[in-house]
Image 1 (cartoon, rainbow over the protein chains, first blue to last red):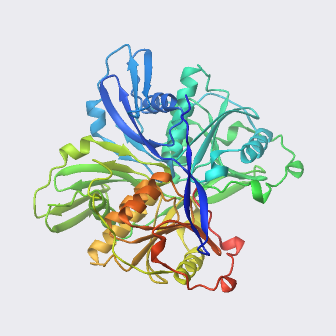
Image 2: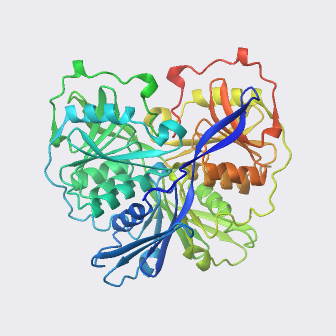
Image 3: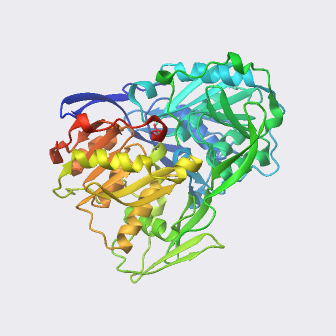
Length: 278
Length: 278
């Protein structure tokens, strides 16, 4: 359920000292509980709190052994989401070990970041270069909070050349978690999906994508060395610096089918081009 | 002390399937201890681990009441920094309450984010618009890891129109903490400084800057509503979207002295312009 008021108009001055009104993105605390246990407080723009809570807990591996999710309750006044499962959970130990991940990819990872990735191999899949160009062109020209207020990140769940679900947030880790929550609620199969992010391909993004079982992660931004290493380890296709006709693939290039005619791919129009988060 | 190998060359393919070699930024875990207590593991490019640890602990308010810092030991093999103080410390309680802050600003904030800000008013200071343009022009054309490898953030400590210290990291919260550590070690006065960041002006960036006692925070990126609110509350001058001849000030405009002749400020050359982190 989306919450109203994702942006606010704020009055200030410009370089000439003239009064201006700037549309600024909101940033609100949302405290996530798993059954009776407080897990974390996340700063978020505030839409889809249930998806964010579900996806965060899932991507942290905190729902494993918890059985079915029986309820997700959101309290608008208290800014709290409570996720209830039919088996009891206790993550006291896990909560003690925190890793503060990198920059834009970030958030907090509880327990061992690599936990659950041992022996994981992502499924066979095909990635047509024509899909990449079609997705980039559509995503970069889709109206978004970014275009209206800036200071926000987007993540898009795609199938072949079709964007399926757009999520945005102040932190892209939140946007990805919202996608994970949406996939859970809608029982979406991951193996034929492509995850697109406006953000950098750091270890946390690669790990989240792997936990979600999605074999392809694409971005217009750059890579980190550890992100590439993990992608190679789990067999994830990692596409970065996807802009106009260009991209780089530093892991899982074996999935790529080179079907695009580059001479017919338009370079992106300057005005509609999103900035990469670098 | 800087650590070698901040970037690594990785082999991949480009949009034509041709082999490429891309220079990619490193991302390594660094575990920070305060005396005998493990506080957090941060993902970092790995330079200036002592500044990062000191600045992180200081900006978290964890050094208050701890007396003098007696030693900072860095272990290159274990990726551990131990900060020792002459008074014992115990942050068990604080470590229980975590806030996962927003996006690029991020990291983990322990305890109440607003703790220590009550009643804080930043010192009187003058901010000449000519300084802003001079700083932006110099910073945007200074060679950096960003320009060579991307996927990195920069923070610069400045006085008047002079950049004094550049720090970069995968996460800009780390870059700011390194600046705070440098200021502690060098006994730098904050009241005549300007903090410049490539990143967004979120609540965490504003809070860190306020804790550091620096009255001006400038960025080429955008704002969040809560970041602006906190800046107004503590009397911080917040300059955003500083690009070419343009900028916006959404808090503390009273410090601005309009001395720049805009007709003589050059718009930034496309090729040297950094992307904003949005």
